[in-house]
Each structure stands twice: as structure tokens, then as C-alpha cells.
Image (cartoon, rainbow, N blue to C red; front, side):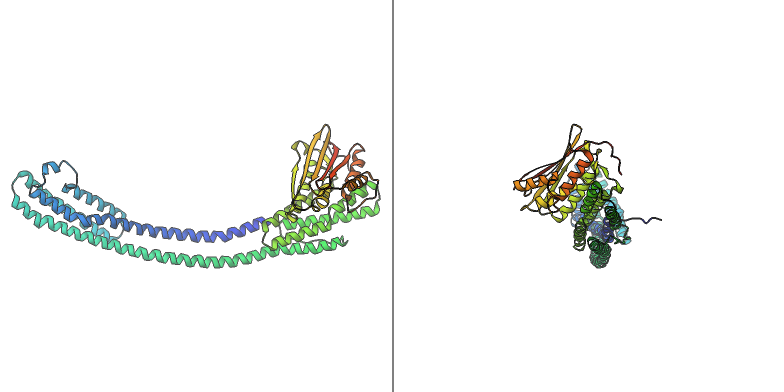
Length: 488
């Protein structure tokens, strides 16, 4: 069975989620609990505020209104047609409505019993008001109304006042209980969050150490194998079973070493000029020191906690080798060559971020044409090492492509140090084969020129322009092929 692969990015993302989810659950629970208690507390405050209006005014207003009606200071015939503050029935109904709502919102049996008592006394009060109002409408009955006022109305309003005070006391007690519960809830939440933070910190430290170890150990192993490889040991192999990009990179490394070993054997057995140049170019392309430096940078990024950059750099390195190998093919599409130089520049930009920027502008209409692999990368590498690196400050490499009739035109331009007239003349002689190959100045570019002439003919090749202090422009012209040429 094939092992399921998990990328380093997914492992880091999983670690982040495992860290966040417990905190989010505890926070959500605590917020919900405190919110519930706060609502209960807020409801008690609102109820006390609402009832307090009746506690302060009801007895005084009701007794005063009934007195003025008995002594005929108020005209009942005029008041009964309105529901203003002087209408006793309106006052009773307003209070009855308020306490009915309070009963609906409460589940405390003591408060409910107190509200029921208030409602019953309001019913009795309404009956006694009826008695006085009938007497007023009949006329006379002044003494009887005064007795009813003193013996019934005043007594009932006083009792209602007492029940209101009892209700306020009970609500205040509930409010204090809710305040204590909120205080305990806040304290409990702080302890829970503190304990969770300590536990999660320990988990994150352990998990981070494990992930860092699983990333750095294969890279250390690969770095050791690369050193041996750089010293000419083609039997080295890297073992990695991490199930992520590192395993892919190890497999690519092993395939690369195997292919280079095979190519070296081919060079020993075959001395054909074209094949010899192609093999030397491939060996130069898969430079052990380039791989060693790249892996070293990845390891330092990982140990520094820059996991996202390390994963990105690993991805670019994997793409770089994938195009370099190309499953043994010598001819690839323009889009693959573009991906190859993009991966190379991405890797180099990690290493030379203070001095290197780049642009690649190859139109889509050119992407499906075929060319020899490793045609543009040596030119880009030459622009970096002999142009940009020799210049002070930031430099830019620009790779462009265009169609010209039935030909493809590629331009690699840099604004680096450029070449003097003598250096440019030497470079052009190197391209034409008039001077011996110089591994320090344009070896890869000269190999590309020879391969172009061998495969496409003398009508195609490389042209160079350069001004010292301003930069260099290399132009490559090849025919537009819709199918790869036969390999062999």
C-alpha cells in the first residue's frame, strides 16, 4: 500500500488548529456562561428600576387622586373619559400590566407569590374604587366615601406598597447572587484559560520540536550526502520516509545522483562531441555546491522558525530538479523551460534577496513550442554571477520572449556590472569557438551556443550586447518547433 503523504505546510497548519481549538472552546463556553449570568443580572436591574417607579409614587398618587375625587376637587365626569394620571382605573391597569410582565419573566417562586399577592390586592383596590365612584355618580355619600377612603383605599395602597418593597428586596437578593456567580465565572474562566495556555504551550513546544526535528534531520542527512557527492562519490543515497516534500526532494536527489552517475559513465564510454557538451552542461547545471548551499539555507530557515519560507524553497528546489531530469527527455516545451528558470530564480532570490529581483515575460502563444532543455537557465545563471553579483546594490534580471516569423526570440537582460569592450570581445570569441572554453566566464553560455548550432544549424544562436556599468543583454534565436525532434 502506498503511504499517504502530508505536506509540511499541512503539518504546521494542523499544529496551529490543535492549538487554537481548545482555547476557542473554552472561550466560547466562558463567554456563553458569563453572558447568561449577565442577562439575569441585567434583568433584575431592569425589573427593580421598573417597579421602583411604583414604590415611590403609587400609594401617594392613588390616595391623592381618590381624595380629590371624594372632595370633588376633581371632576369625575371629565376624568373618566380620559386615561391620564388622574384616572384611578388607568393607574391600577398600568401597574397590573407591569406586574403581569414581571411574572412572565420570573421563575423564582417567592417572587411569583409576591406578584400574585400584589395582583389580588389590585383587584380588591379596584373593587373599592368602584364603590366610591358609584357613590360619587349617585351624589351625596360624602361621609361614607371618606370612610371608604380611609378604611379601604389607604389601607390597600399601604399593603401594596409593602409587597412592592418585598418584591424589590427579593430581586436585589437575586441580583447579588448573580453578581457573585459572575465574579466566580470570571475567576474560573481566568484559571481555565491560564491552565489551557500552560498546557497548550507545552504541547506546542513538543510538537514544534518534533516537526523541526523531522524537517532538519533529513536535511542534515542530505547535506552530508551532498558533501560526499560534491567530492565525487556517486554511490550516495538519501533515505527519507517523512511523507512530505522532504521525501520528494530526497527521491529527486537520488534520481539526480543516479542520472549524473549514469551520465558520467556515458562520458567515459562515449566521446562524441555533442553528447559530451550536453553531459558537461547537465553536470554544471546540477551543481553539487548549488544544491548544498540551497539545502543549507533551508535548514537554517527551518531552525529559525521560518517554516513557510523553508517549504516554499523546498517546493522550488523540487520543481527545479523535476525539469532538470525531465524523465530523460532532451526536448521540452517552452512552458517547462520557463518553469525551470523561475524555480532557479526563486531559489537564488531566497539567497540573494538584498541584491536580486527578476521578471519573466514569455507570452502564452509560445508556451507549447519545443526547445532543447537547459537552454535559458545557464544564461540566467551567467547574468546573476557575472552581472548582478559584481554590482553594488539591487539588480534585476529580465527574461522575455517573442515570436518573429517562424522563429522564437528569447532575451535575458540584466542591469549588472556589464562588460568592458575587451571582455565583450573575449566573450564573443568564446561563443564563436575562437578561444578555449573558460569555466569562469560564460562556460554555460558557450555550451548553449554550441548545442544550438549542432541541433538547429548556423542560422541560429546567441548574440550579446553589453555596456560596462549599465548591464548585459543576451539574445537567443531558435526555430519554432511544434514537435520535439527525435532523441537518440
